[in-house]
Picture (cartoon, rainbow, N blue to C red):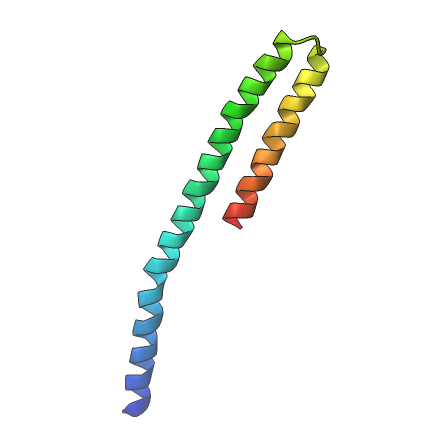
Length: 80
């Protein structure tokens, strides 16, 4: 009898923790998505400024790629 009551209490405690974990993961996903979206816009702006400058197109593309990769890395750090 005591074992079944303890098992029931343990199961209840574990089930109560699941929604909190899901909420935390959802918040981390949203934060990571926001970072990626912000990075995309900043990268577009930087690329536009680069194209207006004297720098070659290949350098602008590489800078754009590097900016996007940095944003992905930041988002990955937030999410995982």
